[in-house]
Length: 49
Length: 302
Image (cartoon, rainbow over all chains, first blue to last red; front, side):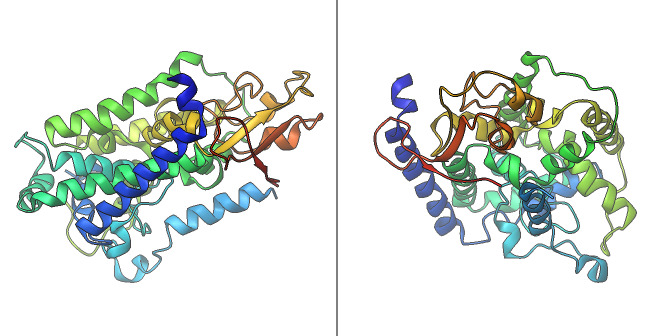
């Protein structure tokens, strides 16, 4: 397992997985819209409550 | 000035180019805010154009939370976004994919070269003062922060616990918004504001005496990238010309011995060691082959 994780194959498998997730999230949620609600919460998070 | 200083300045400006704030007094909420910046930069900063990956990770988990007792502002968004079941999954896919992609390609290279908060720590450590080394066990703090404060608790409670305590949020978001408030009326300052300020002051003081204490003990984004560093395509290596003179450790911003583990999760790939090594024993580059060996295309850093 350790050898596999250090191998380049694991890097490319993870690369493909993450690219798929990224693209799926963007396409599914709408490019540039997917996190649009976050800014409302962040005002809460910075202690202005 | 070092090339890395220029990229750190460029990274800070790229994350915070919304100078229109001074005229409009409106935090940017356009489409770019729906995308993440790879470094640690608060998206509540009046100048921020992009989202923080860790803030976004918490947000995407909080909106999935079964807990209804979220904070007031959060509750409004959660209620609105829950109506679109696909939203939360899409957000989580995007954020995890983004963090994973950056981590698996570069490891923690972003931390060393463009992260605004890393840049601040590098600068503060230059202030002449007695210097302290960090106990090794403290590096595990950032993994606890990632799992507990940035993932588990936001999901269980619907509250962004990491953001609530984050000193970068205090420095880039809370303080500027108090000094130069938005046009819209903001909620009154609560006790979390002062808690964040206290945490910020503590870390700022620590940054003067210790190399990058926040990156090494508390940065959830650095922890996520660190987990992927052992499999990242960008690799460091040390050959047998190394005579362990420790010149590399002297210049290392995270105080590691690169010859012990060339691809240590702690390494921010700043390449200062490569430049400083008198024997030229340290190399770096992208591993592009499919074999497990260290096939590299060596690059020059500075």
